[in-house]
Amino acid sequence: MDKDDLILVAGAGGFIGGHLVSDLIRLGHTRIRAVDSKPYDQWHQCFDEVENIQADLKNLDACDRACKDAYHVYNLAADMGGMGFIENNKAACMLSVLINSHLLLASQKHEVNRYFFSSSACVYAAEKQVSTDICPLKEEDAYPAMPEDGYGWEKLFSERMCRHFREDYGLATRIARFHNVYGPHGTYDGGREKAPAALCRKIIEAKLSGRHEIDIWGDGEQTRSFMYIDDCLFGIKAIMDSDIIDPINLGSSELVSVNQLVTIIEEIAGIKVKRNYLLSAPLGVRGRNSDNTLIQQKLNWEPTISLKKGLEKTYAWIYDQMLQQNLVSH
Image (cartoon, rainbow, N blue to C red; front, side):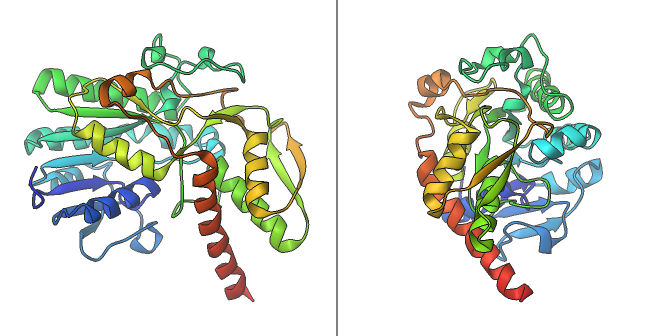
């Protein structure tokens, strides 16, 4: 594509969407349309040099206007958050099927060259994620289907919609299954934050208050992999530019427990904390990790930024935000 072809980023006010817009600017793209339903002052990042639009992409008319003249469409828009939000807002998560369905219709109408959908590891069958020492999840493990209720079903259904728009209408679609993306300029409080940001916030609060004690959801032995945002951005572009038509994992294969995650953040913060385990809190699956065999074969690449390195940058950003808030409140 040319640098002056129009790129639509749906969900541009969100964490990954904001970083993607920033990266597209860095790469020299001159026509970027950034769309999100949130008021501009709630966007994680907002750039004056792009066309910023506040619109609810659950509506077909809004999608039609957003996709007009677009060459590439990146659909990162969804009503979602961490496990606490997902488990308590299943209907809201499911309604995001309207965003993808209407964006696909509008992309077909306006003859978009290529369409990217951000799926999730939440599509994987729950029965394959019941142990902390889980075998990494391969792409075919999504079927027979039994994803996480609400959010996982929405993602799996939307994947199928992309597939059928490709098969029936010739729309070139690309699908990445994200595994726990984290980094600066993300949500770290308010109920939608994910584990790395939430634990950074809790340990920073413990450090600033002098009360070296935090709450941990579950027993801390549940396992996950976490992908730093820079790896995610590289993967998005590589998958979008590839000939990979089926859903593919985009995630780190560095498996850690929540307790190990806390230990890493403790080392960054320079403190030790007492850990209070909340066994009745939302937990999600017991273990989840990304099998990167396919992405290695297809792209000769996989996410490589270590959790320690990514957390150092994430912790520093959250610390600065919280310090500023603390100074303002006083």
